[in-house]
Image 1 (cartoon, rainbow, N blue to C red):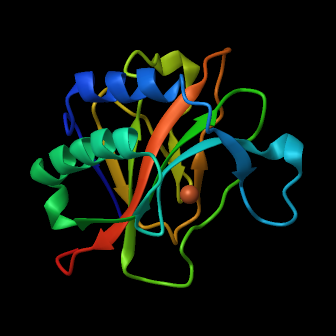
Image 2: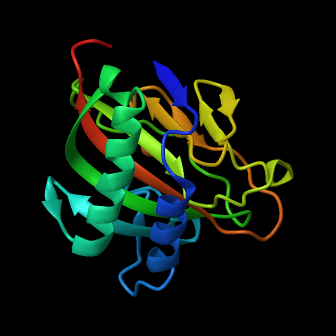
Length: 175
Ligand SMILES: [Fe+2]
């Protein structure tokens, strides 16, 4: 399943998270973590919450604010705001994103995704590819999806860095 909720979160929250994240010195290059992925195919990632533990207090607080807004705007039909993981990924035109699945060992998780670039232009592409279809982000949209269905970032054109905030949260019984 995939659901897009438009106007799920105030633009100001996304802009603020992005401005803080861009200054962090804790970005790492572990992702994708699969053993066969070479370093040249990895991308920067900033962890906020790992295994339910907050690793960046300030950004995790802001991120949960965004998540709660999406929860309020209809996301509650699909998830509880119980966060197993949250992080920010940077993707750009220099690498093809790998199509993958997440959390293949459990069926009680959904992912919630926000684009932090609220000034993103459609001609830069960089939407969210899910089960063969591409979903373009609108500023403030939340994309909620089953992580056990193959997905990736669509190709990106131009030289912008695409910052996406993602959460792994507990699925509700309603979906
Ligand atoms: Fe993923």
